[in-house]
Length: 504
Image 1: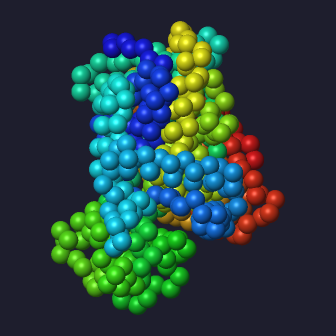
Image 2 (image 1 turned 45 degrees about the vertical axis):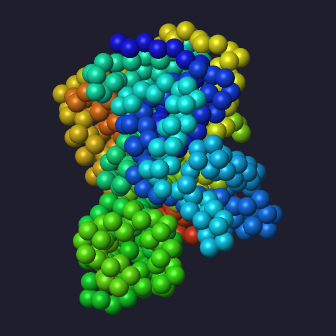
Image 3 (image 1 turned 120 degrees about the vertical axis):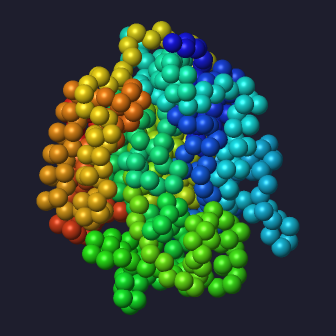
């Protein structure tokens, strides 16, 4: 057993986790960061490039930016939070350029273009900044549960060092959960580590979730690849297998048309609305998008290619741990949440923010959570842990069988994307049965068992919230409840483990 002490423990080494660790260290805290993979290379951002919701502090530009997605999100976002995120993101990206020396490209007039980053370079520099700030990093060290003191205060966390084969415990004055969302092992690029671990750990100590009904994001991808970059498909035309136009299909509005068609036949695509200028900008902006096409000898601007939809769950959805204050506290003393682990309803409402808003949210929420965790820990010390939640009992059912059972309920388009109460209710009943199996114990190792348990829990919270929202809003669309009801312009919270509860 590896035993460590720190002021702040950050779980997760993606953008939100590294910004949280950096801010906490800047505030004078002794920080330990644990990552399921290798901090700087694991997660959705490190595997790809992303745009950033980076808007000049011009009132008109800011107003346009905030208004652009309010309708798509069902008017559940919050202007105060959006303004704060825009301010924090603008300052943070500028800091990345100056302190991190990130090589932003320049326009024809020599001005840096700071509205996007290449994930591998971004995360390489964030790891360097974090290490330079004195943060101790434990790579390949997934979280298996939080530690709490006798008064319920979070007092650290426990986990496993995968490569050494030993467990660890970190006693800390505050914990930031930045473990990412849950993509249910769908195969989306970079999302293999996103299994909902943070959400499960948070609920185990008394936190709750918000926006879980908006966790059914599906991204467009070439059928021969896992690269999900839906923004570029705004330049696309979509076709049936016989070559005729697929009416109503689209990247922002019309994804359900694609899903319905995919149930019966292939869907083809071509990025034929991008002119020469756009094509050059797209290749320069996100070169990794084109790698699977180049390797297959496909010119996506001229050739038809087959597409699919890949579930991204709460990675691109907006559901996550509910925040109870502006500093990203969770309501549990000493516990903070950031990035995809936290609900993004405040800036996205009920619709995916895509990479742009999510990147801004990761930077901003990570920064706020890190500062707040440091202040909390430095003022209150390091409580002595008396309880360790988390380990899944050892049993005979393979953890991978549980994962397969969950995927059978959450990945099909006609259950999760094209929703109907008559399909959601039986699926939730089956997931309740899977949870009973989890409680009886799993075989497969402690952290794999935790992944299976977390996916099961997230799926149950997702469908419980989806059945509670008795309308269609944002990305939550129910065939049996078409249209939005003004009475439902409010948020839904959910929580609980054996007995899941919902508050609408």
